[in-house]
Length: 130
Image (cartoon, rainbow, N blue to C red):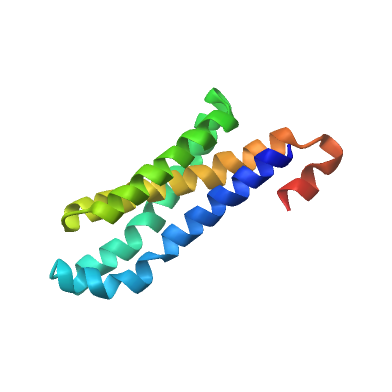
């Protein structure tokens, strides 16, 4: 169980760093890709919008396929989408990678918490989720 907690902490840390890591990079992206204010705003809002879109379906998917499997798949998707953001050659690719990142992030928060809850003994469940 301890390994699972370490994995979840690592996933959440990577998720938050990548989610907020765009903020200091945005001025450089704006100059490099000649982005309008609306396009820069779209980059900032793509991931939170995708998190909202993914959260409930991810919970339902984890009920069907298992929270561990869905969480691990979302972790792989976080890595892939973060790498795609790093090598994006234009605004459209960057926006798509950011949206996919948000889908994976919403899935981690939904399925990952379910995985923690499912893995913890009943008497420690509330402490594990806290």
